[in-house]
Length: 185
Image (cartoon, rainbow, N blue to C red; front, side, top):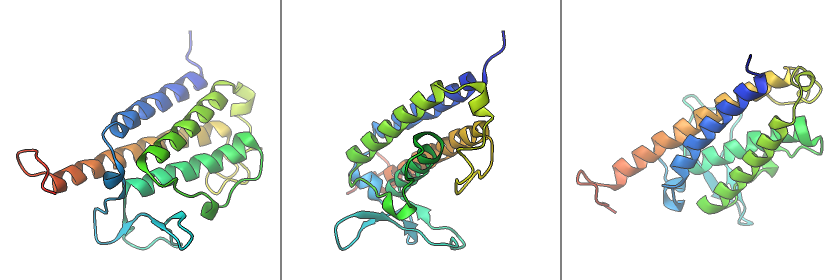
C-alpha cells in the first residue's frame, strides 16, 4: 500500500506544528518583542496603534534579524495570502493589511486558527486538485506552481520559521538569564 501525497504533506505539517506548539508554551510578550540585534525587524505600533511589520523591498543586505513577533506576523502573512489564493478564493489582503494581533496570546490564537483552516483544506484535497494550478496563478511566490508544490513549500517555510523562533528564544533566554539559570533582568 502506497502513502498518498496528502498523508505525507499532513504528516510534515503536523510535525512542524508540534514543534511550534512546544515553543509557544514557553513564550510571552517580552520574548516575542525582544530585538536580538541592533538591526532587527519587528512589529511596531503605527500612529493609530496598529501593529505593523517592518518591511523593505528590496531587502537590505544583510537582512535584519527578525523578532519572534515579526516571524509570527510573517507566518500569518504567507498563510493568509496562500489561503486566500488557493482555498478561500476571496479578496486576498495586501501585505500591509495583514497586521500583527498585538500580543503573544493573540498571535498564538491567530496562527492556531490559520493552522486549523489550512489543515481542514489540506485534508479535503483530491489528487486532481493537488495537480491544479488555478489557485496558485496569482501567488506572490509559487506563481503557476502546482498546488502540491505550494503546499510542500509552505511546510518547509513553517519548519524554517519555527526553527528561527526556537533559536531566537534560546538567544533571548541566554541574554536574560545568568549562568545559574536565574533571571538577570
